[in-house]
Image (cartoon, rainbow, N blue to C red; front, top):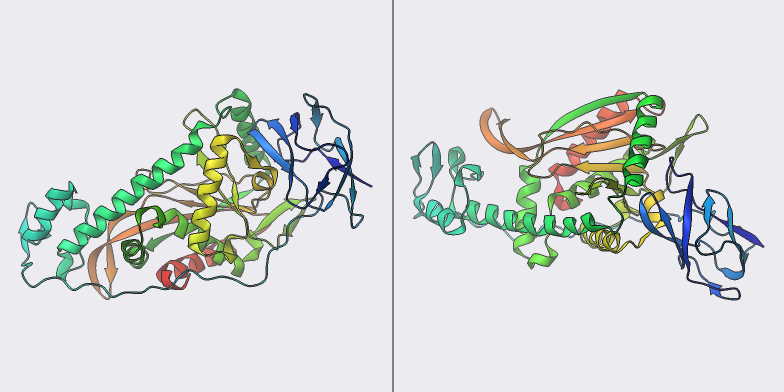
Length: 400
């Protein structure tokens, strides 16, 4: 026999209310099955089992409020282990995203460049920008001396449209049925207060030239319908996961005065809710998934967050957190580590900046990446090497 207990979904969780059972005594359950719903300060959460077995007794009654660790049910496990105590193991082989295909189109000879109001662009590019309602001053040029051609405007417009679509999808997470209740804000405040009080933070940062990454994304998206296009946050999550595979010291938890490195790389993505509060569901085993799989997983998480059906594993298993401010945010962000994790990666907005390339100054899309690290687990040297690896990943997006 094994006892299924109230799971802990964060360092600040003390108790939760059982809303509903989805099983009854005598039911057969398999690993991953949802057996009930609990109401926490993070909203409604589905609870699942991690072992095959048979429900022997439902100890807790619907409506009961139980502390973390309190017995909720008795389950006869097929292998004699206590259900709910094992964590999912990561597969061993990595999957790679689709490689880049197709060649860049060369600018048409008729696109003779001219310079007006400080913008170097061909007449055709300016007409296309007017038709597509694009601010041509924000378009990075691929021609000689940064001259903007027609294809640059079209690529920028496609990216802008796809970004707006992706942001609308993210907004679904802002409608959690009870996301705005004071309990969520209090839980976040408690976790952040504990983080600042107990974790000796250090910060390192680097600026990353995103031209290759954005060019690759633009080319990929031109070959796929809008609903299948990839946005920068998906690429960033994948790059972080791959970098963690090389620097596992940043992937895990600090507990019992020691660092516990996790086998699986589960990247938590912070989603800020309009009504106040934060939800951080995890993309499980992100280093072993393609970017297409990560996008699908993430949008699934957003949809279920909106419906109040995130699983306990998805809330509690994040081994690191990524926060991205998006295109309309600040240039850089310095995050606060979410205990018991030991690191947080922050991404500011991608902005056009002067950048030296092969001895010449040009304008490139630049992203500032920061790492907040727990000095008990790692130091600035490890954090800096991690950012170097992250940069290398983003310079070869076709290989991620």
